[in-house]
Amino acid sequence: MEATSRPPDGPFGLLAELTYECPLHCPYCSNPLALADYREELTTAQWRRVLAEAAELGVLQLHLSGGEPLRRRDLVEIVHRAAERGLYTNLITSALGLSPRRAEQLRAAGLDHVQISVQADDPALSDRLAGTPSFERKTAAARLVKELGWPLTLNVVLHRHNIDRIDRVLALAEKLAADRVELANTQYYGWAWRNRRELLPSTDQLRRAEAVVRAARERLKGRMEIIYVLPDYHGRYPKPCMGGWGRRQLTVVPNGDVLPCPAAHALPLPRASVHEHSLAWIWERSPLFTRFRGTAWMPEPCRSCDRRELDFGGCRCQAFQLTGDAARTDPVCHLSPDHGIVVEAVRAAEEAVRADEGAVRADDDAVLPRGGVLTPRPHPSRPA
Amino acid sequence: MRTVSDTDRPRLAPHARMAFDPARERHVLLAPEAVAVLGGSGSAVLGLCDGERTVAEIVAELHRRYDHVSDDEVRLFLARLAAKRYVEVSDGSDE
Ligand code: SF4
Ligand code: SF4
Image 1 (cartoon, rainbow over the protein chains, first blue to last red):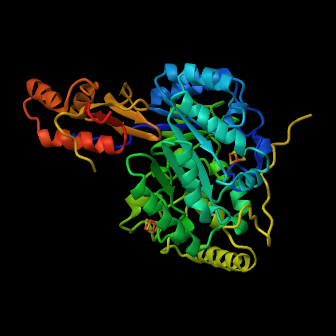
Image 2: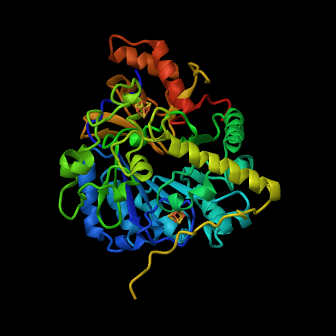
Image 3: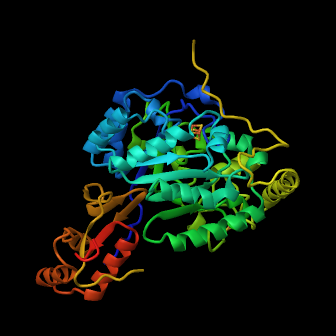
C-alpha cells in the first residue's frame, strides 16, 4: 500500500537540453564553457527518434531545458511527440519567448508543467544578474502559466548575492501563486565554476537561509511546496549525485551527446552520441554510463564506507573538476583525502563575504559584488 | 499531516496523472518532478479516487474486490498523497 520505487531497471527521466542558445547571461549558468561546440543541434526528426527510444527504455518524465528551450522553433512539435508517448513534460525556461500564443500552443500540445527561473525578487537585481531586462516579462509569463491552468514552479538559483533575500523571494512566489518553489544552491559547473569565487556564500549566510526555509515550510504547508537544494561545499557528505551514476536519469545535450549527469561534458571517457548508437545501447553498454555505475569502481575511503549506497561517493564531475580524476571520492566529503580543496574554497568565501559586508550590506537593493567580477555567460558565438 | 475522514471525496490533483508504464509493467503516478511506481493496491486505490466516491465508499469497494484490505493503510496512503498534493480532498463543506 505504498508508492515505492522498484530497483532501477531503466531511466525514469530524460533531461533534453535542446539548445544552448539563451537570451540571458546568468553568471551561475551550468552550461559548458565551450558553448560553440554544441551549435550543430539535433533536428526535429532526430529528437523524435530520441523520444521514442527514451520511452521504450522506461523514461516517464521529460525535462525540456537548455539554454533556453523556447529558442527552438520546433518546441511545440517536440512536446506534442512526447505527450503522444505518454511522457510527463516539464518546461524549464527563463520565460523569455513565452508569448500568450506560444503558451496556448504548448498547452494544446500537452505540456504538463512549467518552471520559470527568476534571478532575485528585486527587478533591478534580477535584471542585473540575468544580464538583460527580463524580470517584468518573467512575472507576466508566470501569471500566464497560472491563467492557463498549469502548475507553476518558480526556480531560483542561490548564491552569495541573493541568498540573504529568500524571505522576499518566497513572498514573490506567493504573490505569483506558485505551486512549488525550487531554491537551488548553485552547483559549480560550467560558468558557475568560472565564477565560483564570487558566488560561493558564507557558512553564516547558509545558516540564516536554512532557518528562513524551515520557517516558511511550516507556514506554507499544504499550499506551496518548497524544495531546497543543499549546497554541498558546506556539508559533511556529498550529494547522492543523480541518485547514482546511470541509475535514474540521462541527459541529451544539443549536439546529440548523451551524458549520465548534465555536468559530464568534459569527462575523459569516450563520447556517447545518438548519432552513433541507440539510447538503449548507451544506457546499458557505453563506457560513459557503465564506468561509475554501482559501487565496484570505488576507491577508498568510499569502498569500505557505510554510506556508499546512499551517496555513491558523491559527484564524479565534481571529483574530476576539483582533482582531475573522476574516480576519486568527491572532495566535498569530509572523509576524502582531497577535502582540503573544498575547505579552502569555503574559507576564501567567508573572507570575501566579510569584506563585502564591511562595505555594502548584502540585503541592500540591487547590490552586486564590488570586489570581484562576475563573468556573464555569453551567447554561443554563431557562425556568420 | 492532515488525516482523511470518511466523508472526504479524494481525486487526483489536476497536475498529477496515473499511467500504465509498459516498460516496467506497473502503474505509475506522475507529477511535477516526481515519479512514483505504484504497487497493485496503490493503483487500485487511486483508480477509485474520482472525486465522487467518499473514502468510506472507496474502502467498501476495496473490501468487495480484495480479501485483505487494511482500512488504516488506505487512509494513510491517501493522507500521504494528499500531503504531497498529488491527491485533492473535498468533503463538500469546505469547497
Ligand atoms: S544563462 Fe541563465 S537562463 Fe540561460 S541557460 Fe544559463 S542559467 Fe539558464
Ligand atoms: S567516503 Fe565516499 S561513500 Fe563514504 S560518505 Fe564519503 S563520499 Fe560517501
